[in-house]
Length: 573
Ligand SMILES: *Cc1c(COP(=O)(O)O)cnc(C)c1O
Image (cartoon, rainbow, N blue to C red):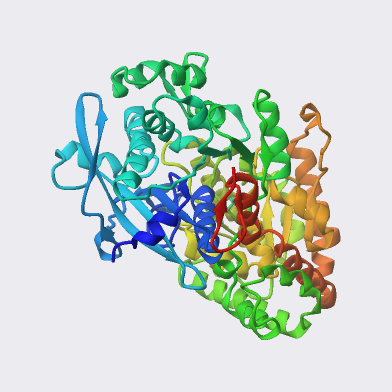
């Protein structure tokens, strides 16, 4: 069914993201950015925010991952038939790429909030009749790495195609285009046309969220490439704003032409202000959708104690009142569930009796997945008969260093097993289903990024919600989380939270020693004392009350979207 007219007329915010993880099995995400976008639209729907979402639909998705016996990552293309789940938009629009008219249509997916409120999401596609075959492949796979041309074309489809499609669908009252990272920044070019080249009016319509704390991570294109695909239609006023040492920088474009900008955690706000000193950059700390990420046994406990907790998630801050035995039983159920699943998928069988430490995230090098193996014999002797590990995550197909990490984990695992009987397993094809199981079924959730490279991170919040204890470098959300409640887990090494980043230490020796000391002197003894452990579990749940996307979306509504008054929401200039 089409979206009804009243809903379209009342829609004031367009949320534009290269990834939106609406469902685990639908391949519109690769990692944290997409999962955050998914939780964003789920919470926006719960709060009945007047929002519409835009993303691309990728018929071959990101990729399916498996490992060979040497721990080498192998990739398979996914084939996804969007027509099973979605409704097709009847009228395509067209956008100009080089000298060709390319048709863009969309699949409509509806996110339903708790009260039944509908938040429409349009997944744009060029795989439609009327396009030549090579055009149909444009939206084929996420972060297509075959060429920069493919990438810029995808971003034109998202930004320019997205704005045009909303216009053609009758969304006539959009006050805010929220660009979630720079991939959607070309929508500014379309707005510039719509608003007759008035830059102030364009700026007044755009909100920009950055997620990347390192300059090199921001999306850029060669000017020649921009000239080629836009056939010199890019307005020079806009090129000037996006200019970055001879390249076209999508973040500069978004930062330069937005009325509000933000980073995704307090520290990330500081870092972004340093990276972009010419702009005001606020911060809104990320969260997770608690209803989506709570495991079944914990949902039961929360429902029993606070029947209305989903409408008022901050009530979880009283988690300390929960019953110890309930928490213990719920955790054991999650742990058995994970270990049983793992037993069905591996030859190296995990053991229910051992402290299970989980690590799952993209294998980007700054995340230092192998830090814990730095002094492998020390690790082995600490963990012998007590601790086991479970890893998961994908490396981008072109990231050979990330792939080497996976091989190193395999090798370290063999060594630890042969010499100390310590088990290390790798789970294949990390996605939201596996994530649900891991973040609730491990005892301890490990995170070891280089300081100030992790904008926020969200998997640790999912763990905390399910009573799992974080064991992490103080970066991103955990820099805030650990300071709010140090009983919710443990920190690795110093926090270096001085305003001057030059003092940051990311020394592998220092940080790995810190890991071993906490493992030996804190984590193992606490585990042996059930009461202490459960006390921490309850503190972890209480902490998760803050890191939720309902709180986050209320901040966006007020500070970024300038919406006032609940139902009906109103945009206030
Ligand atoms: C939560 C989640 C992420 C993001 O986790 P980080 O802690 O930010 O790395 C990535 N991938 C999947 C599948 C997730 O569920």
